Image (cartoon, rainbow, N blue to C red; front, top):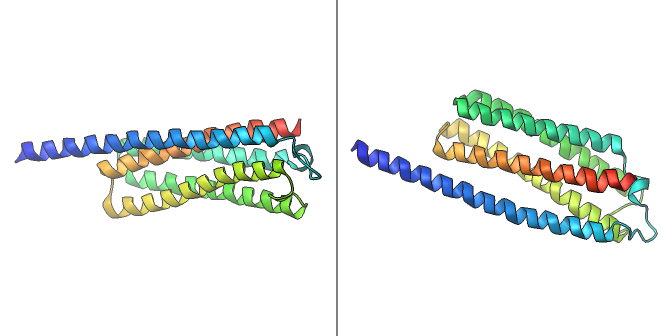
Length: 198
Protein backbone atom coordinates (compact mmCIF):
# COMPACT_ATOMS: atom_id res chain seq x y z
CA UNK A 1 0.00 0.00 0.00
CA UNK A 2 2.79 2.44 0.92
CA UNK A 3 4.61 1.53 -2.34
CA UNK A 4 1.47 2.50 -4.32
CA UNK A 5 1.17 5.77 -2.38
CA UNK A 6 4.86 6.53 -2.98
CA UNK A 7 4.47 5.78 -6.69
CA UNK A 8 1.41 8.05 -6.87
CA UNK A 9 3.27 10.89 -5.10
CA UNK A 10 6.20 10.51 -7.49
CA UNK A 11 3.82 10.65 -10.47
CA UNK A 12 2.17 13.84 -9.10
CA UNK A 13 5.59 15.47 -8.61
CA UNK A 14 6.61 14.59 -12.20
CA UNK A 15 3.34 16.03 -13.51
CA UNK A 16 3.87 19.27 -11.55
CA UNK A 17 7.45 19.52 -12.92
CA UNK A 18 6.08 19.18 -16.45
CA UNK A 19 3.63 21.99 -15.74
CA UNK A 20 6.49 24.24 -14.60
CA UNK A 21 8.33 23.42 -17.84
CA UNK A 22 5.16 24.29 -19.75
CA UNK A 23 5.11 27.63 -17.99
CA UNK A 24 8.69 28.30 -19.12
CA UNK A 25 7.44 27.78 -22.69
CA UNK A 26 4.67 30.31 -22.00
CA UNK A 27 7.29 32.82 -20.78
CA UNK A 28 9.26 32.33 -24.02
CA UNK A 29 6.15 33.17 -26.05
CA UNK A 30 5.57 36.20 -23.80
CA UNK A 31 9.17 37.26 -24.51
CA UNK A 32 8.33 37.12 -28.22
CA UNK A 33 5.25 39.31 -27.68
CA UNK A 34 7.21 41.91 -25.72
CA UNK A 35 10.10 41.67 -28.20
CA UNK A 36 7.67 42.50 -31.01
CA UNK A 37 6.22 45.42 -29.04
CA UNK A 38 9.72 46.77 -28.29
CA UNK A 39 10.69 46.46 -31.97
CA UNK A 40 7.50 48.27 -33.02
CA UNK A 41 8.18 51.01 -30.48
CA UNK A 42 11.78 51.39 -31.75
CA UNK A 43 10.51 51.83 -35.32
CA UNK A 44 7.76 54.32 -34.38
CA UNK A 45 9.46 56.32 -31.59
CA UNK A 46 10.21 59.29 -33.85
CA UNK A 47 6.83 59.26 -35.63
CA UNK A 48 5.24 61.93 -33.45
CA UNK A 49 3.15 63.62 -36.20
CA UNK A 50 1.87 66.85 -34.60
CA UNK A 51 1.87 65.33 -31.12
CA UNK A 52 4.41 65.56 -28.30
CA UNK A 53 7.60 63.54 -28.05
CA UNK A 54 8.66 61.46 -25.06
CA UNK A 55 10.93 64.27 -23.93
CA UNK A 56 7.90 66.55 -23.62
CA UNK A 57 5.53 64.19 -21.79
CA UNK A 58 7.58 61.71 -19.74
CA UNK A 59 7.95 62.58 -16.05
CA UNK A 60 10.85 60.56 -14.70
CA UNK A 61 10.05 61.22 -11.03
CA UNK A 62 6.75 59.30 -11.22
CA UNK A 63 8.24 56.52 -13.35
CA UNK A 64 11.16 56.18 -10.93
CA UNK A 65 8.64 55.61 -8.11
CA UNK A 66 6.85 53.00 -10.24
CA UNK A 67 10.20 51.27 -10.81
CA UNK A 68 11.11 51.33 -7.11
CA UNK A 69 7.69 49.91 -6.16
CA UNK A 70 7.81 47.11 -8.74
CA UNK A 71 11.39 46.11 -7.83
CA UNK A 72 10.41 46.08 -4.15
CA UNK A 73 7.45 43.82 -5.02
CA UNK A 74 9.89 41.44 -6.70
CA UNK A 75 11.84 41.28 -3.43
CA UNK A 76 8.68 40.59 -1.39
CA UNK A 77 7.59 37.87 -3.82
CA UNK A 78 11.04 36.33 -3.33
CA UNK A 79 10.45 36.39 0.43
CA UNK A 80 7.18 34.51 -0.17
CA UNK A 81 9.19 31.84 -2.04
CA UNK A 82 11.65 31.59 0.87
CA UNK A 83 8.70 31.13 3.23
CA UNK A 84 7.40 28.38 0.92
CA UNK A 85 10.71 26.49 1.21
CA UNK A 86 10.43 26.78 5.00
CA UNK A 87 6.84 25.49 4.83
CA UNK A 88 5.47 28.60 6.57
CA UNK A 89 2.00 29.17 5.07
CA UNK A 90 1.24 32.28 7.15
CA UNK A 91 4.42 34.02 6.02
CA UNK A 92 3.76 33.08 2.39
CA UNK A 93 0.31 34.65 2.55
CA UNK A 94 1.60 37.78 4.33
CA UNK A 95 4.36 38.34 1.75
CA UNK A 96 1.93 37.70 -1.13
CA UNK A 97 -0.42 40.33 0.34
CA UNK A 98 2.44 42.85 0.53
CA UNK A 99 3.38 41.99 -3.09
CA UNK A 100 -0.25 42.47 -4.18
CA UNK A 101 -0.45 45.87 -2.47
CA UNK A 102 2.80 46.99 -4.12
CA UNK A 103 1.56 45.70 -7.49
CA UNK A 104 -1.70 47.61 -7.06
CA UNK A 105 0.27 50.77 -6.22
CA UNK A 106 2.32 50.30 -9.40
CA UNK A 107 -0.79 49.86 -11.56
CA UNK A 108 -2.46 52.85 -9.87
CA UNK A 109 0.51 55.10 -10.63
CA UNK A 110 0.59 53.86 -14.22
CA UNK A 111 -3.13 54.55 -14.72
CA UNK A 112 -2.60 58.02 -13.22
CA UNK A 113 0.29 58.63 -15.63
CA UNK A 114 -1.84 57.55 -18.61
CA UNK A 115 -4.77 59.73 -17.50
CA UNK A 116 -2.46 62.74 -17.12
CA UNK A 117 -1.05 62.19 -20.62
CA UNK A 118 -4.55 61.95 -22.13
CA UNK A 119 -5.56 65.16 -20.30
CA UNK A 120 -2.53 66.84 -21.89
CA UNK A 121 -3.72 65.72 -25.34
CA UNK A 122 -1.33 62.78 -25.68
CA UNK A 123 -3.68 59.84 -26.27
CA UNK A 124 -3.19 56.50 -28.01
CA UNK A 125 -4.54 57.97 -31.29
CA UNK A 126 -2.44 61.17 -31.28
CA UNK A 127 0.56 59.67 -33.10
CA UNK A 128 2.21 56.38 -34.08
CA UNK A 129 4.74 56.95 -31.28
CA UNK A 130 2.01 57.22 -28.65
CA UNK A 131 0.16 54.22 -30.08
CA UNK A 132 3.35 52.14 -29.69
CA UNK A 133 4.00 53.61 -26.23
CA UNK A 134 0.52 52.96 -24.82
CA UNK A 135 0.44 49.46 -26.34
CA UNK A 136 3.83 48.42 -24.93
CA UNK A 137 3.47 49.95 -21.46
CA UNK A 138 -0.24 49.06 -21.26
CA UNK A 139 0.46 45.42 -22.14
CA UNK A 140 2.95 45.26 -19.28
CA UNK A 141 0.42 46.90 -16.92
CA UNK A 142 -2.19 44.35 -17.98
CA UNK A 143 0.25 41.54 -17.20
CA UNK A 144 0.87 43.02 -13.73
CA UNK A 145 -2.91 43.27 -13.14
CA UNK A 146 -3.35 39.61 -14.13
CA UNK A 147 -0.50 38.68 -11.78
CA UNK A 148 -2.28 40.45 -8.92
CA UNK A 149 -5.50 38.51 -9.60
CA UNK A 150 -3.48 35.30 -9.85
CA UNK A 151 -1.88 35.92 -6.43
CA UNK A 152 -5.29 36.62 -4.87
CA UNK A 153 -6.54 33.29 -6.26
CA UNK A 154 -3.43 31.55 -4.93
CA UNK A 155 -3.95 32.99 -1.44
CA UNK A 156 -7.51 31.60 -1.49
CA UNK A 157 -6.16 28.17 -2.54
CA UNK A 158 -3.53 28.23 0.21
CA UNK A 159 -6.21 29.02 2.80
CA UNK A 160 -8.46 26.22 1.51
CA UNK A 161 -5.95 23.49 0.60
CA UNK A 162 -2.79 24.40 2.48
CA UNK A 163 0.75 23.99 1.22
CA UNK A 164 1.02 20.89 -0.98
CA UNK A 165 2.77 19.82 -4.20
CA UNK A 166 0.26 21.67 -6.40
CA UNK A 167 0.21 24.93 -4.46
CA UNK A 168 4.03 24.86 -4.28
CA UNK A 169 4.16 24.55 -8.07
CA UNK A 170 1.71 27.44 -8.44
CA UNK A 171 3.80 29.58 -6.07
CA UNK A 172 6.93 28.77 -8.08
CA UNK A 173 5.19 29.73 -11.31
CA UNK A 174 3.80 33.05 -10.00
CA UNK A 175 7.29 33.85 -8.67
CA UNK A 176 8.80 33.27 -12.13
CA UNK A 177 6.05 35.33 -13.75
CA UNK A 178 6.49 38.26 -11.35
CA UNK A 179 10.29 38.34 -11.78
CA UNK A 180 9.80 38.19 -15.56
CA UNK A 181 7.56 41.28 -15.39
CA UNK A 182 10.27 43.08 -13.41
CA UNK A 183 12.85 42.32 -16.08
CA UNK A 184 10.49 43.58 -18.81
CA UNK A 185 9.87 46.76 -16.79
CA UNK A 186 13.61 47.44 -16.48
CA UNK A 187 13.80 47.34 -20.30
CA UNK A 188 10.75 49.65 -20.53
CA UNK A 189 12.24 52.05 -17.99
CA UNK A 190 15.57 52.15 -19.85
CA UNK A 191 14.49 52.05 -23.50
CA UNK A 192 11.22 53.97 -23.31
CA UNK A 193 11.60 56.44 -20.46
CA UNK A 194 15.34 57.08 -19.95
CA UNK A 195 16.16 57.12 -23.66
CA UNK A 196 12.92 59.03 -24.30
CA UNK A 197 13.92 62.01 -22.18
CA UNK A 198 17.43 62.24 -23.67
